[in-house]
Structure formats: structure tokens, C-alpha cells
Length: 290
Image (cartoon, rainbow, N blue to C red; front, side, top):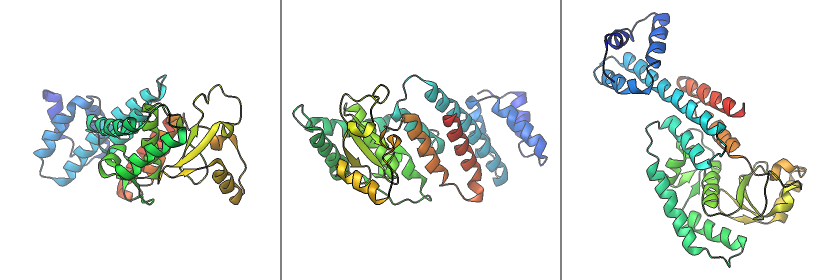
């Protein structure tokens, strides 16, 4: 963006000690939108004062966050909720300049490897075994222990890069591959577990009026790729003295999956100097709920 007298005046006031002046200046800079970011980056590079640099960094962050918030709401309000796009939008909270093409290419490579091993004669369980073998054995995807000091475990592109992710992010990756391969498998809400349910191919969670559990053939653990039978999950629920509530077995909508991913991510920013990130992520979660 070409510099103007107003921009130069605003930039000279970024270091104003008066909080009201600084707030007014920030709001006016934000009105310029993302095109002003290169100017701010140039100002940062030519500013020796670390306190002023921090203020510039925060303004740039707020510009990215506002843009992300708008993109996420547009995704939520769209008629079709592409889970891959939703997960990549979460990545852009921490990595606003993320180029998504390499991530999509990595997914395409995994999908192609699975597709080459599939054929029309395989049963759904055999299909799941092929997919799990390639994802967890050949590709070596691992689930990390819950550690909210490592936010990268909740970002899909970093999971593809490091082959280590949270159970939920790994489950989202698994479901995305299933969707791309036309395999009827979706994450469900079995308490304290992250399971992908393999439904009968003609199951439609919008029109099917029966108990969704009756339409499930088996489950796959998102952490390990291990398959579990209907009886395995029955026994698990009995051990916990839990009822067979329909909501445990319904596919989790894509919007709710992204919402849960953001909720887990908020736990990574408990330090006082990161509370603003926790507040921002909580705001995104609330907007998805609304």
C-alpha cells in the first residue's frame, strides 16, 4: 500500500503512551485492512524499540484475526461445510501466511496410496484395514499424549508435516480421507474416546429416523487405527455405566468438529502473556456455536 500523510502520522503515534490515543490509532490502522500489513512489516524492520515492535506485531495479528474470523463465519454459513477447509482455517490462526497447496498435495499422496489398494470386492472392514495400515503403519501417523504446551498438534498442516497430532486432529485427517475416498465413516461422540464409526453406505444422518447405532458396522480408533466391534463399544459403555444415547452415535457435524478443535486449542494458551489468544479462540468457538 502506498504511504500517505495520514499513514505516516498514524505510524508516528503507535508509540504514544496514552492508551486512548494508541487505541484510536490502532482502530484507524485496522480500518485499512490487510493491504496495510506490508507497511507495518516495513515499519517493524526499521524500529529498534522492542516495545513498539510488540505493538506493531499485535496490530498485524489483529488484522489477520479479523480476516480469519470473517472467513470462518463465511465457511460456517456456506451450504456445504468442507471439513478440510475448516481445519485449514484453524491452522491460519497461528500461521496466517500458510500456503495450503502443500497440505492438500500431502493429503492427495496419502489418498492415492490408499486408492491403489482398494477395489470393489473389499468389505468395509477390509477397506478400513487398508486405510489404517497406510495411515498409521506406512505413513506412520502417531497420536501424541494430551499436551497443551504444543499447539502444533492441533494444526492439520503441522500434523501432516510431523506425523504427530492430537487424537481429534488425527481423527479429522482420517475422516477427510474417508470423504475423499467415498467411504462412509465419520467421527462420533463416544465419551472419552475419539472413534470413527463406519456406517452402512446408505446411511443419511439427516433423513434416517432410527437409532444411529443400528447403522454402524464397526469403529476405528483415531489414535491407533485399531478396529473395534459393536460389542467392544457396548462393553465399554457398560463398564462406564453409560446409556446408549443417540447423540453418542450420530456423526459429528463438520462445524462442531472445527469448534471442538478450537476448544482444545484454547487450552494451549493459559500463560498470562497468551490470554489474548485464549480470548480470541473462545470468541471463534462462540461464533461457531451461534
